[in-house]
Length: 138
Image 1: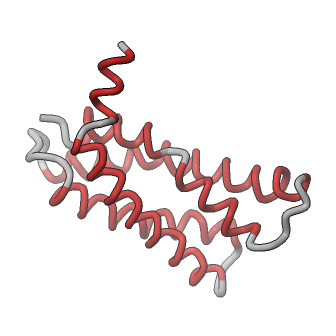
Image 2: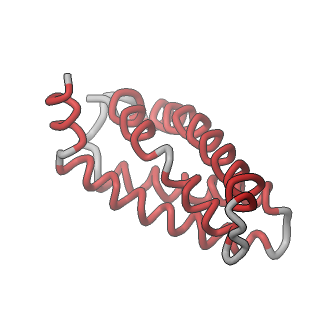
């Protein structure tokens, strides 16, 4: 079991997924900063996540996963389903860190950015498994 997990998470596909996800995360965070000038932090997280999600779908489809047996519509539906779970993880982690953990630690310098970066990083593993076995399944 552990060896199988090691093979999956040490694969070229997973590394490409992390690179694509890293780029999409940068798009997510930068767009959240931009959106925060116009809307509330909480809402900006969700809108930024959607921006990053579109970026991640397109890059994953063309650079990470082989052609799947799903139609484009099925891919988009599964991609959305996996990312609904991921955005919930992102939002919860970001909010808990920002409102509780970072305040308790008395960190006030870039606290929104720190909270959001951790929030974006958390669903990397669950998203990979979901996309590999649902969205872009062979």
